[in-house]
Image (cartoon, rainbow, N blue to C red):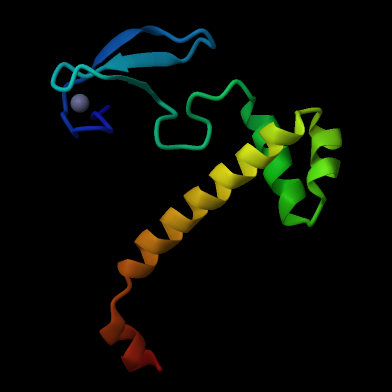
Length: 109
Ligand SMILES: [Zn+2]
């Protein structure tokens, strides 16, 4: 996979993380990273299932204390996941909205 930091194409496998996911090393910028780089799961101990539960509960309007109870995560972990999730969503939204062709919209409208 290409390096997410410098886009160098030839990265090498570089052992596994403590959670058992593949770690990569970029020979160009000398940084290591994993498959989940650039996702909200990167460098978190929380399982993807729990992240999903927290974000789902938040979308349905569950209180932060309620989310903490359902997921059995600490209040602060829940808040941190929701922050990360909403930042990520905002970035994706911004990137896609920028890519919209305004001429096409004007023509449709
Ligand atoms: Zn690199």
